[in-house]
Length: 253
Ligand SMILES: [Zn+2]
Ligand SMILES: [Zn+2]
Ligand SMILES: [Zn+2]
Image (cartoon, rainbow, N blue to C red; front, side):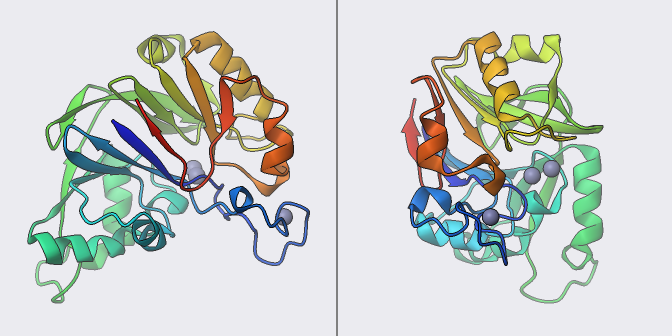
């Protein structure tokens, strides 16, 4: 399985519009973070988790020529706003895009992208095939996926485990039962927003503690704010088996 970090930034992205802090003005390419998303190549399939506002740019940058399915973690705009840009895949491959999400995610997508779901829709609108998921293992275009039910303040969010890879973005609470489902993963991705407390995201310290509890071989942090600091400095604070992810990072398991 090959994993590509399409974006590793928090909801505003890094740099933040109008900000002149050390991170936002850094020349290090690892301090340029598009909105959080990953691409998985697994069993010959191409799967994207979340289509944030930078989806088009991410597909172009990574030269991704087909996507077999989109899986949504939750309904926040920084994870859904790019859905319209699946259209080239509809046109090229002449098929609807399966989109997997829990009921409330699919409902919100139907409200926010109502033009996609009209009976007599305008020619050229995205074509999607919504598939509702619950906290039970499911198959996405032939690929087995196990949801991990986490909390993002009070909002239920799904992380996903695919083989030995677990991806959790936008969370600050994982129950014991869900931690058990993650254990044994070789690679764990977790959100680590910043150093200071936050109402709905793990801080840097909380994310490190969670990695120590789950004990994956390797962990990567994502959904990073400019408030966390420069990539090169922050990474020095981490043990070798925990790294900050950055846009374009590729790993193989
Ligand atoms: Zn987010
Ligand atoms: Zn800044
Ligand atoms: Zn969110």
